[in-house]
Image 1 (cartoon, rainbow, N blue to C red):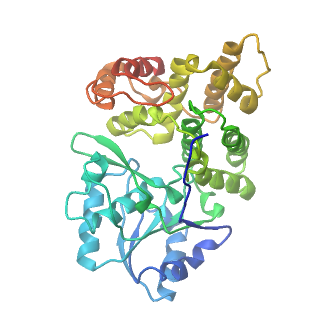
Image 2: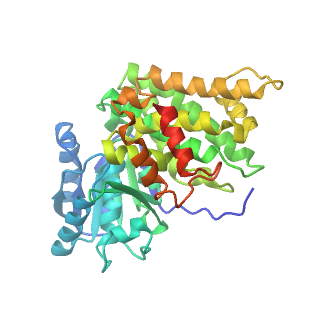
Image 3: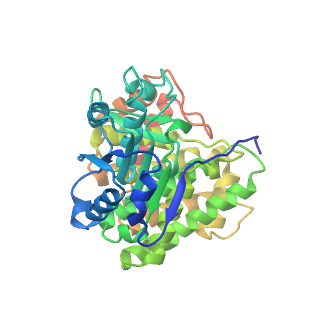
Length: 389
């Protein structure tokens, strides 16, 4: 196990009706708020009215910015930065899922910065300060509500890059599982794939003697696997929704990183898919991860066999761990298919015409390798795309 420091500043407020306390939490940090959200769903469900009433009751001045899209865009980030500067905004409230939260984080660090906020995502500068961000979570998936990361797509070249910084963790996250009852099934399952991918990225490590975090990851995976079908069968199953929502946060708040180094190649490979084709991130991960596993499992067959046994209940076979490993990979593919996710590019309407382009962009035209569990060159990345066809 490696040395580590773990600190997470995000206050979690979890449970039924908790969105009504958003005003009293927000006023601790600011009285001029940018309310950021996506489409009209929060108005249809009544969430918008409850949030606005709570903010009003706390004497908070609200400026709204709607229109956040999946795979959130840099253009809206810059619009939000300009709006915050013009209105002297001192707090950003993100009401939505990962795309809204990631946009809020980008706006937050962009406002006090004299340069182009995209510098942070290019890695040419690091944020030193931010307007504080709070969250009312509506989609359990990205785990952005308590993470130190944000991913934004630049329409100029359709580049999808991430920023990681402790500066951008939200100060609070209000999490009411009831708010997820109205999610379409496809959003629910895409969210599940995103959660599971965050867990897999951490699980596949070369770090030895990390059994505690191995078992925490395995338990979180099993929780998601068990509860997603329950939520699909009964969308108003509070207990199933609560388990999924909390798993989303635990999967990406860095607790499960402690003492180990994860991989993260599959996320980089998927980012090219969703940047170019605008596919849902979770759906892209459901396609990429099994392909990555098939390509990389021989790097540490025993770890894949361990996952197969502990998570997918594959029978122990110490004489043929490769068979165990492959059974675990196929179990994952079958699970994704069973809940309605694509597991091949062609199932998502994507052909081979831009695989070379995506491999170039992912590898910076062959100048970098990605991943830690197995270092992947441009050719490796292309081979994984081809396996995913």
